[in-house]
Image (cartoon, rainbow over all chains, first blue to last red; front, side):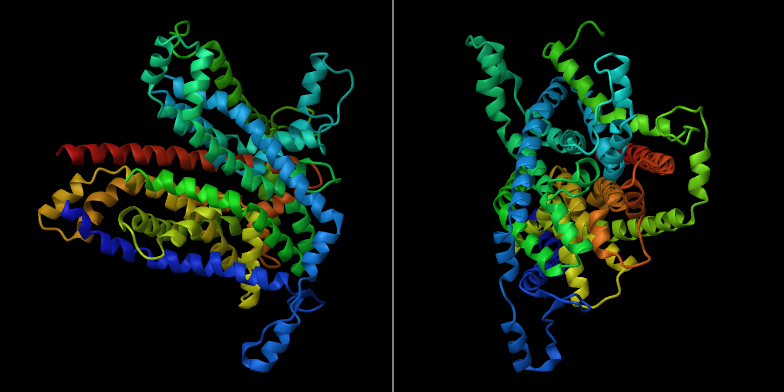
Length: 304
Length: 272
């Protein structure tokens, strides 16, 4: 056992480079986001004021710091547009995460009950679409959902509808796109926790007289809760900030917060407001992020 | 065997599996088929044709964007694989060390962090330190995102690794580092390769972070595709997407072959 300890020290040294990298390119940028969220938009290069010039001396820095303000946050709180945008994001994320769970659970459950040697194959089949481009998968749905697209053609051929329906640029299209893109993220952790389930527990429940439905709710489902938690967070958090899917598939009416941020940044060139939106979004997502981080850590490090 | 399913596998299970996989694959299959459509109208079938592939190979802007994307993906995936593997080694073998919680937090958070936040924050950093935006800024941004995925892939392999070979190497007089490099590294090599490929495809695919961090005149392929499809379906984009899917499939197949070969080798080594 002492031999295992010996590699610990060089292994720790391996952390130095990735540690510095993440501090520099993940942690440090948030300081700039926070600072620019307190700045004002300006017709300058870069398009915000104040800019701190470290060579200008202490007094100049203090004067610049004094011009920082909470104006952007006041705007976000006073203009309904932003509140609606945050609410819509949370609502869309909650709805689609629920649908993902309802759709993903039966698939993960079925895979976990396949003969053992087929399970990895089925999981690879679930994961492969995740490896093909996200943008392509959203784009594939534009092909299908457009006015004279395949979905309308099929539905009309089956006489389900008599005239083409409008699918593209609706919330239904957006939900289809989100569910399609995130389904592997839901199935993966669900399967991981369902595959660990001991069949003997179910047999015991049935021996004691529980119906299959009852033994599912009393045994299987509670034991799969860690997977449910991981899957829900793995989908919910990024969907709240989703930009591509609502932009390409939803209508031009209500916007999700990712779209609002994008618009303020790229169209209106209001970097400080975009930064303030990002700070608020991060604040909203902080608790689910920390919970996710905790689950991930336990999953990767608990087994050691 | 079709009639006799596994004891636990009900008709409901089979239906769920078939519908789930069908839902995942049908849109991609349709896209691939339509990329060979001769008709300009995307929804009218005009017979098989390679017309849109020819169009793509004559589209200078698209080709330039593809080249930019491939270079960024190769460079960032390589950097991410080195950094991510080091991070995985530290997390899996470093036991407890100071700042470990922050370290793993920084590595797991980007996995779910909305891309608009990651992209915006990196851009503001690049602007503040006043670097020219283009190839290098996108590469650094993609390295930051994808090294976290590499870490998770390699770390879960390292955790499940049997360390007896490494201990044997040390008993035979190897230093701990040498023992790790010669006994364990070859065994985790398939995961490292898988991590590289995952990083490569994630980088090739990314629209949001690249849009924030790139500069004028250096659009990546997703940025070009995005600006094309915002205005509707373009048959040429179907062809590009099919080529992309082909490339990814090729990578996955070769990686799984490589991992089969190397795991067979690992088994032999373990038996020997």
